[in-house]
Length: 232
Image (cartoon, rainbow, N blue to C red; front, side, top):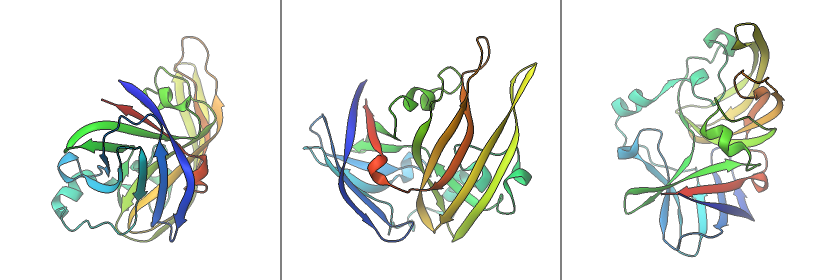
């Protein structure tokens, strides 16, 4: 497995919250053209959002995507309640608020395809030390920083809510965690930014250290994003 750092260039175009184009360059790219795709509805219905050329230059755009080729029954299979469609979930739907049951689909990573074969996965983080935690939260500690995912839904929605609830650590310990959501979501794909503000440091024999205070918002500054790819 080969890891490479995708360094964003300054060239970024913003229109609406859903129509976001980012251009950059992949350092040490394996000199192969690839498609950048999202898979909210599985590999068979992957949706191309951009390309990486053989020199490593890439452009990704979440706006103006055509979902007409994805059957509604397929969408329904992959979509779930909104409060389940983020990396961090409140204790239950009632904790999340009145929009908890809006249908949505989470996209955790950007995938790279070459000749319709899965060739790599891209992590979007502000701090490379976040990647081991994203790969295995049970055994790797979290760190303060930001990371980004994508969420898909079919209507306009503003989310302004927060939840605080106990997280089980071991038989003797519960820790209060707080997730605050402030999002302006549009039909189609939306960048979602997770800012880990505090990490609860666990003791030996407990689960790995985990985020205890997180803000969830729209993407604020793409220049903070490190695009780190793992190739297969």
